Amino acid sequence: MTHRLIRTLLGTPLRCAGICASVTALVAGCASKPPAPPPPPAPAPVVVVTPAPIVLAPAPAFTGKTSGARNPRDYRKDAASHLYAANSSRIFKGKMPPLLHAVGVLQVNIDGRGNVTGLSWMRAPSHAPDVMAEIERSVRRAAPYPAPIQLGAVTYTDTWLWHKSGRFQLDTLTEGQL
Image (tube, rainbow, N blue to C red; front, side, top):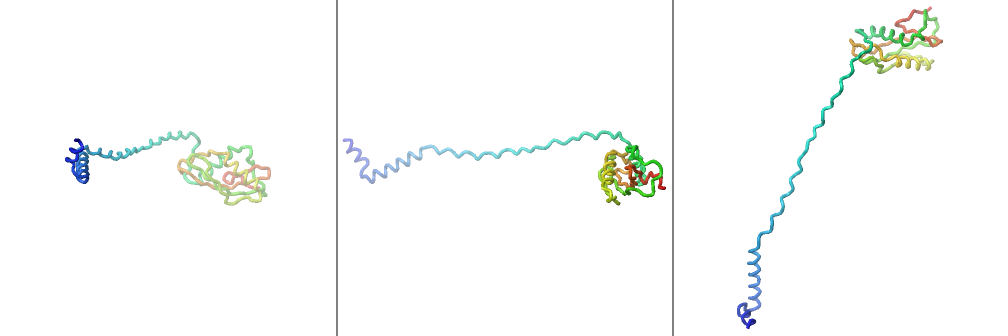
């Protein structure tokens, strides 16, 4: 009897398929909605890193010799005296002989603290490269020079009078020639 009751209620197979579809739709409509997709992730916060300011230690106070020269010509006297003091055993005493081993004209750049920042030959004694090298060494070894406080930095020129003995005079402080 059960078959007959089902057949009576459902009728033909086509009608049965329609009823099944309706029940399925009805059941599907009763189901809860699918969950909403998760929200997109929030953008990462932008972190701005400000570098710490660089704090430089103050320069140590200058305690060396100073020059009050107001022009390169006056500074040349201070530099020549400084070179003589640094090379006292190598200074030619008295008048230079008429024939010298070498004569050179050198420009020297001095910064505001008396350091040598450059050398430039205006008249190089190229026939005596050993003398050129020794003059350059002597100039650099004598640093620091008196700081040119009035000038900030200075370029001065002096003439080196070189005797064959290895002793010299500077034109600025020369005792002359025989």
